Length: 544
Image (cartoon, rainbow, N blue to C red; front, side, top):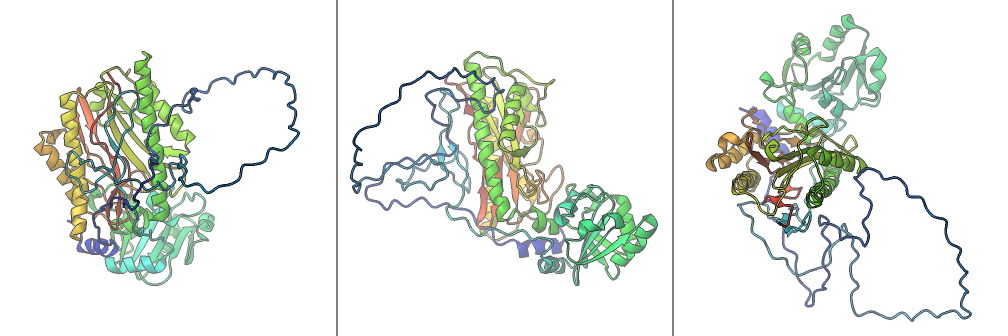
């Protein structure tokens, strides 16, 4: 069970979560302008001539012929007067700018979701080829976003010390050796890449203290507080005692019995060394929630940039598959994956290897194709695409999405039924977070995972859910916040406002097929916001 102090911290820091209920646009005009708003996720209109494929292999540059001589065109003898400017009584058509504010239009028809969900979404269409595609709901985001929960920086000494007071801690001891603890490195941000053991203590009272090897002490000059140096192992224990003088209890990147693996970063030997000074060690998991896992305004903006790129790349990949099958051209999982890799690179994103699984390979939740292991894609195959990326910068926030499609015009009933169960489990997870928000009550990651699994159990797929429902996302793909997990680990941490998670339950029938529906979710002060397009039915790629 989570310590009472951790719950108290999370409740004190998290503003009440209320469900995000987008309001329909008001139709105040008597004669609405008939301008269709541009769908930023719709497929582009075909150009008169086929444009160059930005993700294809580079083609050789064409040889330009010498220009033919032309006769000079004589200038007119008299200037042509410009037409007089008149006031137009009609409104000009809006430019095709997907990022401009759309013109007022009549209220759209609300399409009910297939399963109960707290966050409704507008529906759009995005056929990858000639086939009619199921409606693709856009992410549900409030028209006027609420205030963004700020991230607490380690330099904000008053705020960090306030958190320590709530936790009844005498300090937060951040430690790293040669990158073994990336969490401490991201929070403290030492300059350069110090490889020897270093410590940074933020006490509950007083100024911070840095302890580092004398050759690397300059890496901490930009940080507030005193600096201590050691020269070798004989000197380290003496200086460590000086650093921790008067400190009884500290937080460290440690988790009792490694119950939260993402937080367990300090090795057992260093724990012994710290405890030998007479200090009691507790987990810094609650402190990491607000200093690293919280996105902040810049992180949230960066996340939505990644969402846009992933959406476009996913649509392009499915269209690529459909066109190849219709043309009778051979295509493999690896072909599609490499097209996605090129697209991610062109768009300036950091990413992990995209998952492109076809047919029976979809039944393996951890399958990733490569140059020596990739299946051909055939008509009738189920396709699972799983993408995760962020802007290639330290504070970029990851986005993740998984999408299912069928290389055909219809979806076989067993696959459709399994996907429907996964959709219901996904929506139940989001709904539970929103329900607790409305009641202003906390919810743990384990509770959310258990709620999603209960839906799959009722549908007959309880033993086919082979992984957790979701995980934290921040500047790391597997972030430092709460994971939605009650099986791999029992994450009793509170879901905290300002952080983000993936919600992606799956159903896997080994050797046959597997389906997964994954979205990214931002935990706003007004309730959970689904930030990626939400798939409610498997997408057919072909017309027949």
